[in-house]
Image (cartoon, rainbow, N blue to C red; front, side):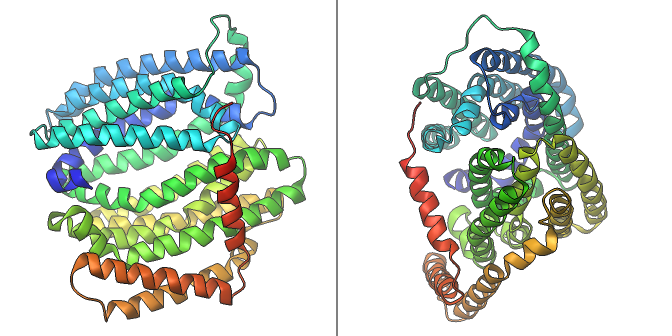
Length: 454
């Protein structure tokens, strides 16, 4: 937020171009073996060490590839500073590999408080440094240093707060069973990441760094609550779904309960953010980012269904259906590329609307496959969520009406609309007898009671 008031949209756009290369390399370096560790019922320390050294070696190779491609990327995208920035992100890739096994093990044991502490302190320290560098005139390099320092602090804290250490005695034979599951999941993630990062690079090439900065700012603002929620969902429910995978009925019931809990958070968060997009952008980022509010409104509609995407795919992974997940991603990205290609001729708002269309199609594809394997398909999922949708619509109507009476000063307007939205939504949930409120509170209490170390 502070950085957005100091730096210009174009500088964030340049970083987004560089992140396209990092994002692809990060997915390939893991190769899905981290997720395989979470999904498997029993693992040995030798397998964990094999995964650690595999990630480290693959990250080293991919970091070298990033350094090699950096001059070409800088020339093609016409931003010379990209060469140095991509090099700095390559360093972050290596640092990330040092802590990747710790994150997998913490996720497997559902020690989410430790992960949250690591993310909090790494974000705080790297953010403070980035603000100082931005004030000293470092420009886009302040953002690159923020990423590099955040990766270093994360790795250091993970090694400090988690007792796991690798053993130098490990066998390559440990890897093939993990890679058999992992490569399919890695390929699915790679397809998804490639679409996201390449589409951002195309926006930067076609519309320029300034417009890319505005688009990615709207995108990151929308993704802040959904990424947080999706991260918790995947870390909590993949292990939980794996435990229930022996029974088709138990897994379907777990998916139904988790979907209602997740959407009770996602629907008000995304609808509310869409309705208050203008005061949020003006208050947090300043008037130079005002156009991002228009994009944010649309992208919130796309992000509303994100928890359902995560949960449906987690249910399939819990059944060991990584190959099916890969085929799903290929199909979804065919639709996504079609929508994106058509939208590129009509500006940034059209591209944002293409994300809404992609999200809707993706839900039906994901849910159809869950229907085939669990008997809990798209229409049953929609039917189980009608009360949540109605509560969200009541809240949206109340906030839209309250906005007609709100003052013009952005902070006061935002506080007024948020208060109306929260009050109306909670009242609607009680009126509609949504039991998931108590379930959400119980889940939060359960997470807070979990130990922070093993």
